[in-house]
Length: 206
Image 1: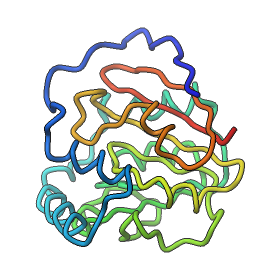
Image 2: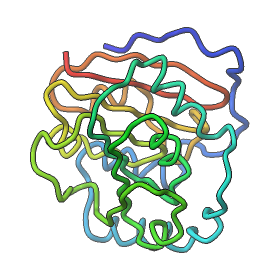
Image 3: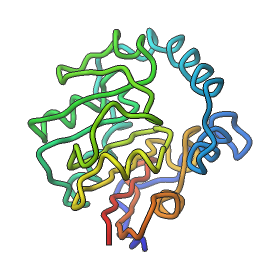
């Protein structure tokens, strides 16, 4: 069950960008339902490898502020933090300011090569994470494809899932808080809200 908190004072509706038929939206919904294969992995890898250079400029803008709002108002804590779909590390650096043990993973090697993050980085397909069961306390996903079974597997029993869409419902890789809740195995409880144009959800097993 998701409880929606009051939006932040700066909350706003995002400008139209990605509709329901956006190719990445289609892939995101399919992956959350367990539909992922080598072709999908290859296509997404190629797409994000090509975009890496333009995403590598070190900067801090309000696109990633919903992540910090989620951490703060969602009362996120833990020693071992895994960021999936870390990209060029713009969000990773914010996490590294709050948590001492952060590992950033991404499918696209070029994203990691262009990363500004100082946290450890690893190249991996999140559908088959190279981690043992119960390996982390927090799984963070910012504009990331959700692989529910793997998130559930590597997350400690009392762990936390942080889901952020920096452009809210207009983010190409988007699932609502309720979609994430429904996709994750078992029963979960969580809180969700909006900061700026972004949305976030923090979920824990009930």
